[in-house]
Amino acid sequence: MSLDEGYTTPDGRKIGAVVMEMKNITLRFGGVVAIENISFDIRQGEIRAIIGPNGAGKSSMLNVINGFYHPQEGEIWYKGAQRQAMKPHAIARQGIARTFQNIALFNGMSTLDNIMTGRLTHMKSSLLMQAIWKGPAEREESEQREKVEKIIDFLEIQSIRKTPVGRLPYGLQKRVELARALAAEPTLLLLDEPMAGMNVEEKEDMSRFILDVNDEFGTTIALIEHDMGVVMDISDRVVVMDYGKKIGDGTPEEVINNQEVIDAYLGVAHD
Amino acid sequence: MLYREAGDYKTTYTEDSQTFPIKLDRIGYYSVLIIAFLVVPFVINDYWANAVLVPFLIYAIAVLGLNILVGYCGQLSLGTGGFMAVGAYACYKLMTGFPDLNIFFCVILAGFVTAAVGMLFGLPSLRIKGFYLAVATLAAQFFLVWLFNKVPWFYNYSASGQISSPERTLGGIAITGPHTEAWAKYLFCLVFVFLLAWLARNLTRGNLGRSWMAIRDMDIAAEIIGVNPLKAKLTAFGVSSFFIGVAGALFFAVYLGAAEVGEAFGIQKSFLILFMVIIGGLGSIFGSFAGAAFLVLLPVLLKNVLVGGLGWQTDIAAHLEFVIVGGLIITFLILEPHGLAQLWRIIKEKLRLWPFPH
Image 1 (cartoon, rainbow over the protein chains, first blue to last red):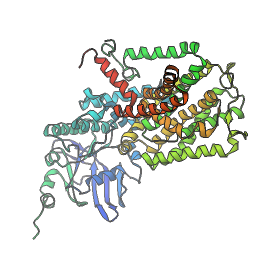
Image 2: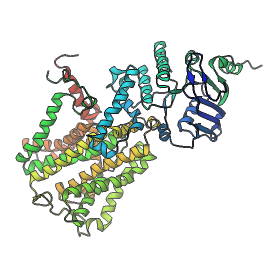
Image 3: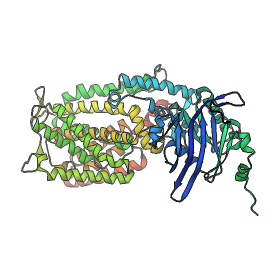
Image 4: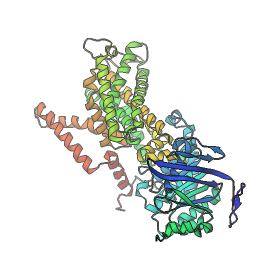
């Protein structure tokens, strides 16, 4: 699978060139090494899973991609150029969106406002224009609302449009968070345990939405997930981490038969 | 029965996101505007203007300003009195330095000066949050009051250390100074209240307002989405201080006429306006008016009842007034911690279904 031009998945989807490449990333917190010399790439249009036991450094990896943490060593290449250390809000403007392990919605706002906030990077009217409101600002608001309504339709959350998100049940909150991330029309979408704490039905819904997003919008998705069934079903390639090191990388079939991965998950007898 | 959205169909997104989606609310809003602009100026007298309406309008502006900072952006500030003083002294310097400058522009410019000062004192908010930020703004409060007391240039080297507003007219009608008519004061303040409330609503409904609320609710997620915390917090400080500066300028020039900084713009003022925000409801424009009305009207009402109605002595009544207002604030906050705005929302919610229980 070392083709530069991408590859074709078993179900016939075309996977393109490399969008993001992590080269020899090392991240330390004082004496603790959270990520040790990890390299992997994410290709255009693929669903890339990052798995591993608790404390393996998966969320830290997403935080590195997001710009919350700056690795001590290594290079990050995004869209063909090496990325300099920059603030998370600047990285958001480059087309990287994410959801959080613990839901991080804006509880004081309605579903609609939460998703509209996701379109922030696409809105241009200045403070003065917004102060006057009539004219450009109002027009822009309506245009963006139309795009947001499409996402609301797509994720089937029309009925909770004006409900404050704090009142929604957990599964729906997760869906609103996905909607907010999608509203940014990201190139790369990072999902941190999108199915944590969900029942089987909700997991099925969420898997369907993730596949649909990838299929309809062509969004590249990198996700962390603990449910192995889901990971094996929906992801194209999997990175396996353990204690900050990469112990496996490849298609779900390759990874699941990797002895090191099996050992990490099931443990090995020490004699 | 009348208060329904049923049958009032919205066919555009603009209509759907209008300020008053229910027809009865719209009628109410326009009626209030008509009464405020066309009826009250003809029936107002000195007592009503000075004791009730003018202070209510001016406090409403300050509360709107502080609500933008505390209620919408989540940055706690105790420097309101100091920022009002900046507005007042900027207005005074402009009025005396440029006697030909229209009083309207003096007030607006004073607002801009305060906005700049507010943004400067808002810089620590990029590093510290919550109570620690409150303490930093408290430092601003004491520093500004000290500054206006210590540097004679600010009060034009007057012997008393006070500032007093010279007479300025607008279209031949006195707005400031001892010869101002009650209705002129009222109308001048009302125009500012109307403009600024409209501005506050516009700024909080759109992109900027959402980025403020995003910072308030979950700053990490906000940054991930692309909100620049520096920009969001500093614009909140700037806009908020603009409102507070205008309120300070009006408070000094139109309402008091003469002011001494420690007395008129001390720490009590900061607390009073913060109480108005909390009692009215954080993050609500209606709440800003409700909170200002509550704390301006209640003491006046109590005084009239106790002294006028029951014939008590003034000093006893004055002390009892503190007890009652304080007690009411505590009771109120326990019963409805989200303020009058939430109470109003619940009433409207119930009214929509009335007379059916569900």
